[in-house]
Image 1: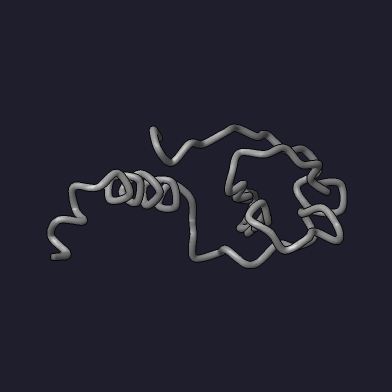
Image 2 (image 1 turned 120 degrees about the vertical axis):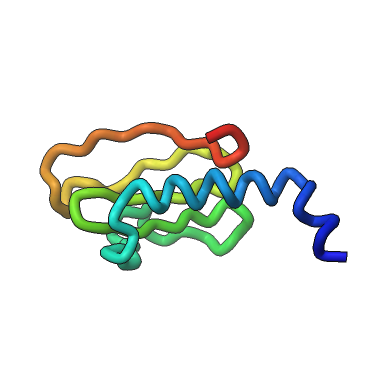
Amino acid sequence: YWEESLSLPGALQMVIAKRLFLSRPFHTLRPAPQLLPENQEISRDYLAAVQGDRFAFVYFPRGATATLRLASTAPTRWVAWWFDPRTG
């Protein structure tokens, strides 16, 4: 039964997500709620963030937009890019 799951799209997406996490020192990750908008409603659009040493990941579950609070955290200059786990 589980072998059938290996051919589903989610299996390849997990491989792509693993590559993303391994591209950074993921062992330094810690929750980063200070990056997220204040007073988020619990919903399907709830954002999650983790921050490592000199990088962060912010998860947008449905590709929405949001204003992140970057000014209060190091580094003082951020570079951002979009990562789509369906395509890498």
